[in-house]
Image (cartoon, rainbow, N blue to C red; front, side):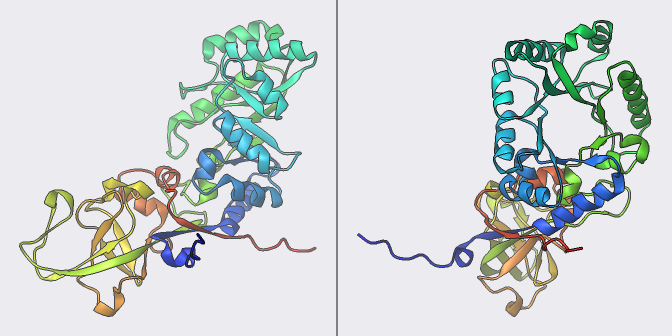
Length: 378
């Protein structure tokens, strides 16, 4: 039996996610230039914050990025598969027991977070008969991963623990970088003190927001993540980064309503007067958060329309009573995230942060990638 040909995937898509790789590259380039002569890495964990490692990493590599940072080993493998051979891939999640040979086999740099990690890497280096490169994380106040003060003192008191460990980078992580917090300067002082007691290597401190605290925070290597993808790294000021995504969902149906009708699960929205409700093809299964129920807004033909009723698994209902009938015809696309609805605005309405909006982007979207422009020829 022969299968019938399918229609255009864009035509049958419930929602379309457009990813502007040129904007991602432009954001990285802006940060690279800001921190020079320090190196600018790219944090591409969580599938490049939901945008797709397989497309984001090659685009950034073509622009000159040579250090990529992820959270877990499996993510590192995915990056290694599409990154240039000379790129560094750092895995923040430490050295799970028995995995040291995997790191060396795939040229992935483990971030060693405690003395047990260091000891395991040293043992592996001895078995290999050569010093092996790694990154060592020093905790300066986050109290999650990294050598705490006692472990740091132990290491400084016995540097033989580092024999066979070729420390390429000492790193730490800011806890309050997106705030004007005294903790930022406290962590800076602790980090300077720590690396002053240790053998010379590169130092890495600043994340996206940390970059904007000035050159004292840059050291040798900065690690921007959210800023690459358009989230505002300076929440108290205008966003200096370019938006990187646009999410449009299909308008499925428009119906006339009037009091005392209700809309959606739980009858949480009660219609007060004659009007129109539009149903669009997106829901929390696609990462459009349920917390946007009764709080979010979309743009229909350039006009804001409020989300009413509960966001369900596959559908959202919006009040389009103020729009002419011709503006809300089934089959059209409605802007959920984009020029009129920046990711940080959507996050604020949903009671969360832009990171969660991006990393929740669903798998059902029809994805369209816009490639960066070709590099200028000198």
